[in-house]
Image (cartoon, rainbow, N blue to C red; front, top):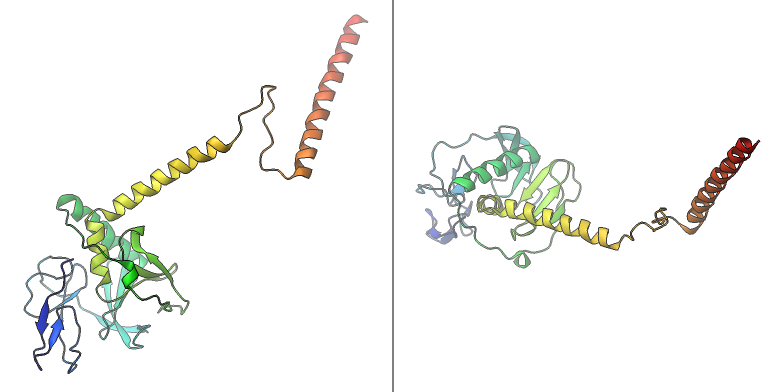
Length: 250
């Protein structure tokens, strides 16, 4: 995602960001053209999306939504995208994306990144204020997480319904994925799992020379009972051997 340019409000001439939905001085609309690829809003004279860089064309058509923005308490505008929906706040620009649609968008960006990768702009998560917001669908407080563990974009996650993105965060996440961020995150997780398995194997004692493996992970009482049963089994085997020898002698 490219850095936002400074533009001027078409009504009052005040300075604004090209990502602003409305002018902070007079309330006039600023970004009014929606990208069909990443759902980012752009100024009317933009040729390429400032979120994903792709050429702007036909806009996706929204519809009235029963969910409301957790920040503004205004009704969302809903956009259907294949397997799920994106809920967009026309006031603050926040977006709540259902898991199925987000998964589809991320898969598309990974494919695009393999063909023509783009560099993502580094983000500092410490610059974002810490706040917990409720899920627009169920009202439960969502969990904050650094998307992909390394993107620098802190998103709010409802495990059941979807992920909340503040204004401009969805394009940054998609740019992170397109630059190979998720692929590298998966590789790190696999390497960490491999090292953990190696560490666990190194901490386990080897089998004893007598052939009976040490008892690991049992409480003392359970360990004593386990050893008692093993001793009884050995004694029973010895007794059967003695009786067999006696019968053969007779």
